[in-house]
Image (cartoon, rainbow, N blue to C red; front, side, top):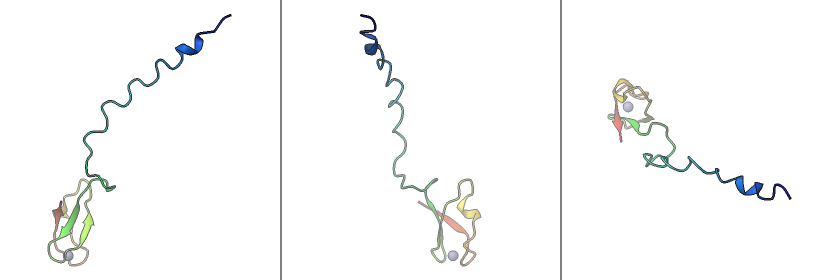
Length: 71
Ligand SMILES: [Zn+2]
């Protein structure tokens, strides 16, 4: 005779606070962390952009030229 409706109370509070506020702001992410490459303007060598390091501070490993940001 007891605990007949106890299961109805379980699960009533599940599902709160999830699914809202996420899913926006990330478009075009193809798996690369920061996104974008640095490209050598001389020989065309591309390197993944290092986060926190501007491309123009990187040197091309092939020819030593300054890298540029490629978007
Ligand atoms: Zn180069």
